[in-house]
Length: 121
Image (cartoon, rainbow, N blue to C red):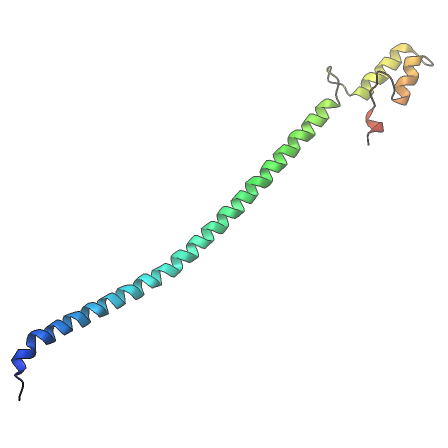
């Protein structure tokens, strides 16, 4: 039997629409994939920058802590009047006169249980 070309019209049109929709979806998928790779690269770059920034902040924090410790150490080496202990000790020996006990203590760095800067370890 011969087929009537008019009877295949709606079926052929349906197949064409499905094929067209499939092509559109395929094109859309390729387009989406082409956008994903640069986005993932950008995300990796941002994550690396964040890690670097966190490490930098950690280094700065450690430097600040060391600076604070150094300042505290320097402050602990000074007497309340603002003079170094060695200078205060020398002034004490000058007032006491040569040969006195205070003079020999100042020269040796002894006296009042404190050590001068020259005796630090």
